[in-house]
Amino acid sequence: MSGLLALLDDVAAIAKVAAASVDDIAGAAAKAGAKAAGVVIDDAAVTPKYVHGFEAKRELPIIRKIALGSLKNKLVLLLPAALLLSNFAPWAITPLLALGGGYLCFEGAEKVFHILFPHGDAEVEEDFDTKEPGHLEEEKVAGAIKTDFILSAEIMTIALAAIPESNFWMEAVTLAIVGIVITVGVYGSVALIVKMDDIGLHLAAKARLAATRALGRGLVLAMPKVMAFLSTVGTAAMLWVGGSIVIHGLEENGFGWLGHHIHDWAAAIGHAVPEGLTGIVEWLAKAGMDGLFGLAMGMLLIPVATRVIGPLLARVTGKSAAH
Image 1: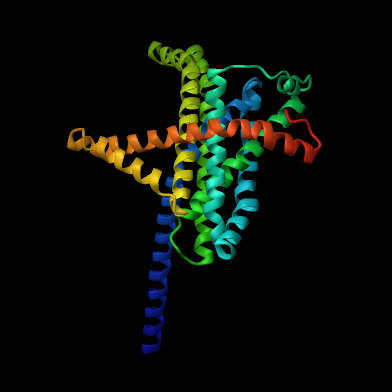
Image 2: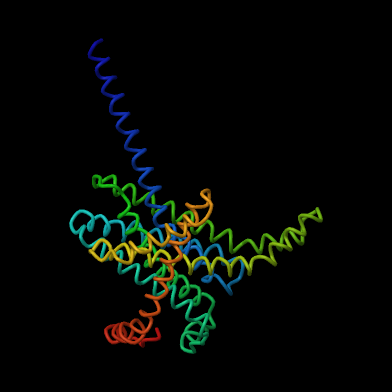
């Protein structure tokens, strides 16, 4: 009897440890996911453009293909690479984060540049001017998965950096949870967004109540504005996250002047408003300054990317720089 009681006591102890581990993993996953929120917003804002121009019946299958490609990016390619870095080259995480942050600054600044100085690219338009919808769909899906790979790499690296020091398996499970939850959340939201106008059309045509039909018409009219808003939010999030990552990387390498000044300026702005608003105003001020830094850095990177890196890659791959 005493042996049985001892066994039950051991089982209870193991259960407590397991429960604590689950709590630790959930907490780490939530923290890591929150750190990657800016990139997630951009991912959600970027994806709907890849189904633009297709028949309504092809929208969800295209999103499903991109989502499956995103899961493969995160779980099959990036998760093992992140774990290898964490366990064998942890010193490389900060430089890789900074590199990814620079890429986000470049992407965000390029979008702003194209808004300020719109110009068409005939070769790019010609690439997508195909007579076969099936071929166009394959091109769009492949392009979306490539873009997702960059954003997913940044998400997984940010998540890895946010996980408290732990063992190999906790890091693996946490990253897997982050990857799955973010992918489901992003592409579930994208599916809802791209079908919202169809839902509105259905309500406007088939609903029995006048109020419901009016709601449907409102959805149809609102969706272009919602998409434009999401694009703006995505660009702002890109610049904010990219700028903050680069500033943090500078601090980690002993160049903390800019980061300290931004912190002090944001604190001063926060203390200039009523006490109840201090926290949110300080956060907004810091995010705004990080974003302005990201925009400035991205603008500087545009000629580097287009005139140096692009032609160099074109020479290595044998493809034209426009592609």
